[in-house]
Image 1 (cartoon, rainbow, N blue to C red):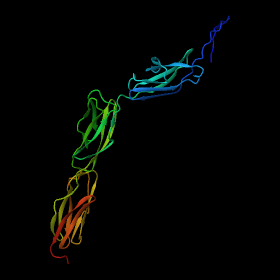
Image 2: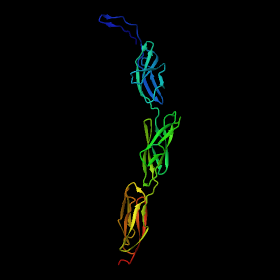
Image 3: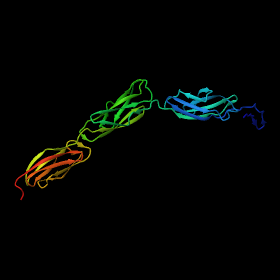
Length: 312
């Protein structure tokens, strides 16, 4: 459509202007996306393109929320790619359609560009043998211009990085992190959270440290002799510090020959190395076996010989 205008005041109106227009409307079906280091805009002509023919489009950009604008290009295409923006920055873009008799209205779009480098890890869970090692990779989205260090840390003494940093070589995108499982005398698996950090970003890897220690019941005797009516002692402890309480059951194959007391010993993570004693009492001449057992632990035995005249 065309239009004309005139100025009016209290005394009357002036003459009409020459016909203006038709002018293009707003562009339609606008889209915007950021991919790597490029912002891509795409749009369709205004709905009135059949009567207000578009000659070209002007694309502008603002980095301060729309206060100031910089013209990027005038193009006859309905798409534009901007490769002059900065990483991790919020921008406004606007497009206007221009015709022979004037321009339409600005149509604005917002976007925040990607960070320059996105930090990643090849694994989020990792098994490491106690006393051994395993690896995972840290990755960046694009090659670095120069050798770049990435920090590595652990929240537990059970596992530790081989070095506090790993280096991505110039023109590279990844580096290998080595995690060592710390050898100890604790019974049971350990765990740790490994954190890698770069440019304000962090990623974590959950590490399970697989125990290589074997718990054992330790006895100070493997064979004893006791007279009937008398008793003797066997001292008991554990070989390794347990992660939780360990209960040891004490039984006699022939209680009528030799009895035991107590029948149950409990070792904790704090007293596992302190010996506890079991009293073996001779009841009738003969021989028997006293067993010391706990779930998941090899049973230990003491051969008992009871001497003296039979009990009438």
